Image (tube, rainbow, N blue to C red; front, side, top):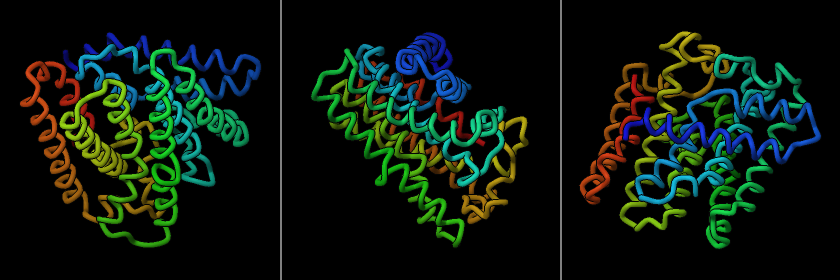
Length: 297
């Protein structure tokens, strides 16, 4: 099964679950519901939830068992985007080709919508009927770590503070390993945990997710300087205006592309080893191989 086939079969079902969970939890606050829905259902590739579901497929486990974990992850990712776009952070006017949440609903509602998505994420996981109690505890703990002050928030803080100084490439990698990579790694870890995958499978797939997360951020940095606003859906050259440390600003565009290609090759190596170790993996692993096409320049 290729990526397009997997998306066509599973992502509409997942989106229906995603919205139903939101609808059940915010029945009375109309403006809050609208603001949460605007960002949550506003497009995007759904890479993180797709990684959860595709990992379950690769491990030959019922894919819908991962809906709650995937939804919780997408809720947290969406909250982070709402807050990242705020004037106090990146001050972005557009996200995915549309006005950002605070531009549509105002800053206070945007902040509350983000807060609501964050807290609802853990409620969805805690109430899942398809995940055992011991797995829920582990998943909740791992998600809190990935999204909190030892993960995504740490990366966001380092990113903000980094605007006041010049980082080395290793320091920048650490920022992105937390800011972007932590939730991408969680997606694969959650899938492996739900599937009770063996250690070798888990190690290689977590390695793949780490390389994918880094490639995703390098690609994002490059988009800001080599693509136009129609292609990105965001204001271009925004990183430079904010004096952000990026791969192109440190390595140059050519160097950043070389770095990106090297990281992609490392991700491909992880997938090759999984394919060699598991007889029935090659067909299902095509989804992961094609995900890497999203981050190529």
